[in-house]
Length: 283
Image (cartoon, rainbow, N blue to C red):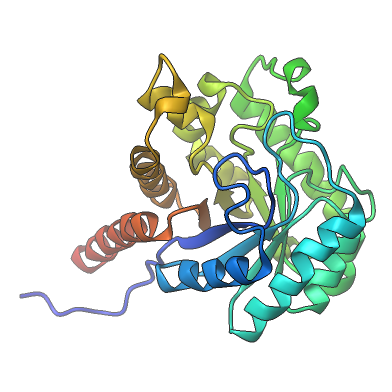
C-alpha cells in the first residue's frame, strides 16, 4: 500500500447563506429575527460552513432596496454576535457604510454583488481596511434586468467586465491578493447563460484571482428540476443540484461556493479534494 503523504489539495470552502431579511427568494423571513439569525448562523457552521455570509437586503428579482439605517439595524448586531462566537463572516452588501460597520463589528470579507458599482466608495473601504472583497459580475439592479440579458459571448463578456472591475479596485488601492471574483449566476443572465458560465469555470483562472461560485437554489436550477413550473421544485432536489454544482466548481479550482445547505456541498467538495489528493499521491 502506498504511504500517505502531505497533500497540497485543499477543499473548496463553504460559504453559508444567512439572509436577515423578510423577502429573500429562498428563506426570506425565516431568520429575520435577530436571535433566530444568530442561531441559524451557528447551525450553518455546525453543518459545514467555513464562512457565514450575512446579508440584510434581498437581491431577488423585483426586490425593492431597503434604506441604509434598516440594513445596518439588520446586519451589524448579527455580525457582532456571530463574530463573538468565532465565525468567519462575509457581509453581503452594496453599501460601503454597512461594509465598514460590519468589519468593525468583526466581519472579515466584503461580498458586493455590484462589484463597487452601486456605491462608489465601496472599493475605497476595501482598500483602507485591507479586507478581501468579492467582486461579482453585475449589470444593474434586478428590477432592471430585462434590459441586460443580451450577450454575444457570455463567458468572454463576463470575464472582460470582471477584469474591468478588478482594474478599478486595484487602481484605488485594493491589493490583488484581496480580490475574489464571482461570475454572478442568475444576475442579468438567463438559464442558458448560467449553464454556459458553469461549463467554462476553468476559463476564470485567466483572471488570476480566487473564484466564488454562487448558484444555490437559484431559479435556473429550479427550472431544470421542474421545467413546467419551477416553483414546484422541491428544496431537497435544489440542494442536491447545488451540491453537484459545488463539485463542478471545486473541480474547476473554486476557492468557495455560496450555499444554503452546507452539509451536502461540504461533502461534495471533500470528495473532489480527496480525488485530487489521491491523484497527487499516485503521481
